[in-house]
Image (cartoon, rainbow, N blue to C red; front, top):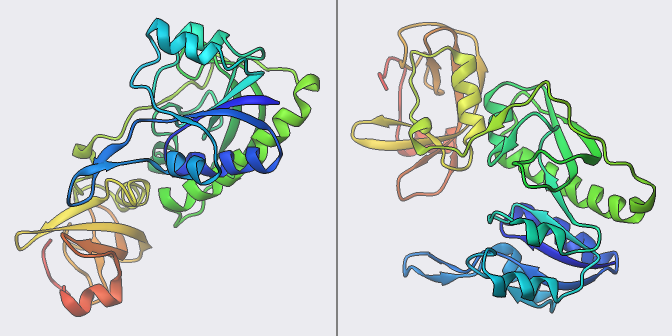
Length: 301
């Protein structure tokens, strides 16, 4: 098929690779404009931009799709279909209508659960036992369109957003190629009205750990916010991010270390911190971290 690909972050790259490998004619890749990054704050292209150029594909990065020029340029590509995955711009109706078969979205949840910006984070933070990927026919509403294909994935007890991100990205790549192969035979199923939840964008204010919360809530917060923005606590004036954890036996005064191996008492129960990062340093497993900053039994965080 002749298609337009629309995506920006790492999550989108496996789908781009899969569609390219399958031999589809990718007329253009739309992505977010380069952003300032790194110490020099120089404009840096995103992962999809970089990958598309490596594949020799034409790249476009308009700041808006609401102008008449942007919409006419899009329509002039005469695409059969557009594939959208974590693109980052709202698609106005003229864009949705331009391809012959409309626009398909790869969404990382089991719709209608977790419509919106942060479905992977929210599924872990809510304690969901499973999630998945849906291939959705896009319409004007926020992730409200009918679903063509879906697949499920369990969420492991120690899985982080980074872990689940990679699994679902691969699943989405597989499902979108299957969808395009089977498109004439697929029936789009409307989403039910029951079970709708919204995965609101992660606010950095959610990242501070409140040790008076129960251990299950804190463990989900840590894993759901890893690697970004990273749940954190302060100790001796230093902000420390926690990027991995699991539930552990024990109890005590909330925020106090129960041993020399980073088991921390919570409002109820305890968590063991398994991966941490000090400001300005790389992430480290707990045993390595403790060599540089011991937090012995009885330390109050």
